[in-house]
Length: 383
Image 1 (cartoon, rainbow, N blue to C red):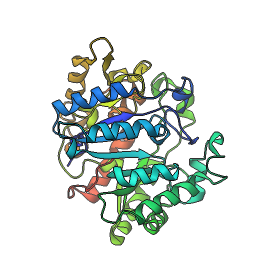
Image 2: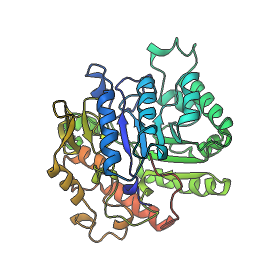
Image 3: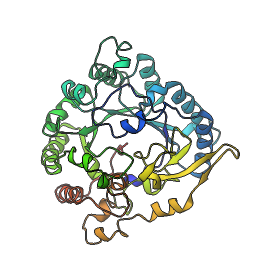
Image 4: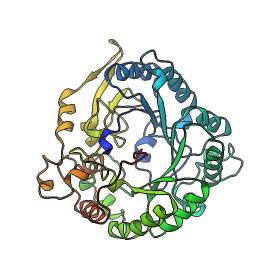
């Protein structure tokens, strides 16, 4: 099932985070703002609207900070959704988390969440380098590192799953620190009990202007896409032999045909509720009021007087038209229906428009498809 078919209601819970990831794509944006969290009333109205207009009953918790830092809201929103008279008994819950949370939160996750994606870059040395604990939170975890807490929570959740409908997987950012250690990471994740992993090549952080207008950002960014593919393919086959899924963000549409790349193109079926009361189409457009060059993804705003969202249907239609079959650079590409025109968020962030393409990523996707081809439906779609 192509990634654009992943229909769900996402909640950006809070801007607060307990880690200081070295490559965080929204840290500068978050740190420039006063900490804020989602409004529970807006969240409930979003659930009402979504359940009235969509068959899906899948809800998801995400950033821009660490969702477990707003645990009470996550608990309340989940309870509201599961008790909803319009299909609440069918609700499934997904979370993408850094995994650094306390014991009471992991107990709740065990009993209330169905899909847990741990943002997890690998062995303790890699994890602690890339994703160190925020100094403000060291006392809470008694001197343990982010890797210590994360590994303990992963093991505990997997060991206590029993007959519950719960999958604990990893979402790995590939950087210079782990790009040539992918087979080693397969062994590491397997030893923890993880059987589903999605890897993401490092991408540019989001700022106030597109990357094409930020020379300093371009000069300070490094990622070897060819090397990523070189290392990914043997790790993919090695993982397959072990019974572990080793996915790539570049292959998210290899299990079906789709003109759209991802759920960005269908925001009314996969909306993201922001902490400041907007609806975003994209995980990379996290703030509605200050979206800057990512504003094309801000498709609705909460109206406190009418108690409903005011939609910008022109933006919705523009996103829907962004298809690989409509993009000039994609016309002769043999993989256009197994790519969908590449990631919209990254495209907009890099070029400031939706119809460009990143030749390096396109070459990598074509190379991967030539080697791997189309495949069976992924059991768990990319978060």
